[in-house]
Structures are given as structure tokens and as C-alpha cells.
Image (tube, rainbow, N blue to C red; front, side, top):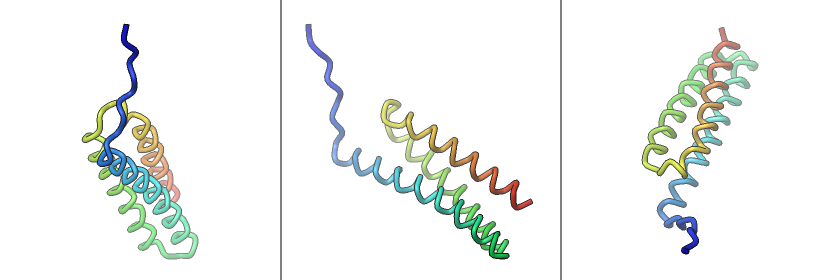
Length: 94
């Protein structure tokens, strides 16, 4: 009987995952920026930051398609949360 060992990630896969993690952080940071801009009376900058957060979420989804299911599924929850936060920030701006 052979014991199944999890496959080790290649360096390229590790880097790809780190880039996705950084993009997730960037997306949430952009939402924070949008809220700060709105609170400072700069709605145009707020709107731009939210648009960039949306583009970031789309980019993350594109990158996730390149990973295997086992590597990408944890990030789908984060992207869903990111999209929820973007929608909430947009509602706050209305």
C-alpha cells in the first residue's frame, strides 16, 4: 500500500500564489482608500479606487484559473469577500 503525499509546489507555483495573495491585499487596500477618499470629500478618487479594486478582483479570478482546483479554492472565498466589500462600498457612496 502506498501512502499518498501531497505534491510539492514548484517555485513558479509558489510565486504565482504569492502574487495572488498580494493582489488580494491590494484589493482590500483599495477599498479602504476609497472609503478614506469619500470621507475626505474626494468622491472622484473614491470611485477610481473602487474601479481599480474591481479590476484587481477580476485579475485575481483570471490568475486562479491557471491554478489547480486544490490550490485555488481558498482564494475564491477571499475574492467573494472582496467583491462583497466593493459592492458595500459602492452602496455607501450612493
